[in-house]
Length: 88
Image 1 (tube, helix red, strand yellow):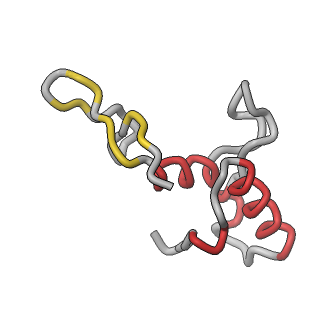
Image 2 (cartoon, rainbow, N blue to C red):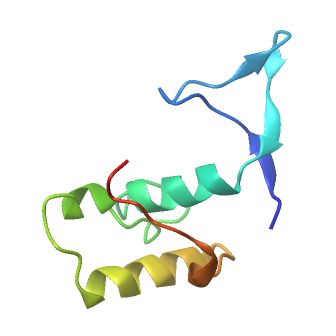
């Protein structure tokens, strides 16, 4: 999609370049946020979020993948274009 937004570092802090927030391609960040957020984490969108950390020790079932697809589509992403790697 090519969305642009404020970028952040791996530790979650805002990336700063020349004393200002860095702006850039943010699709990967948006998708990661959707997967990591739990429902209720976002005040404006209380149903948004998958809570992927709950699946790290288990085997994700069909309901999990439906939830991922629903959340990604709600934000304009096509699940077929997203690769999820539980090993990272």
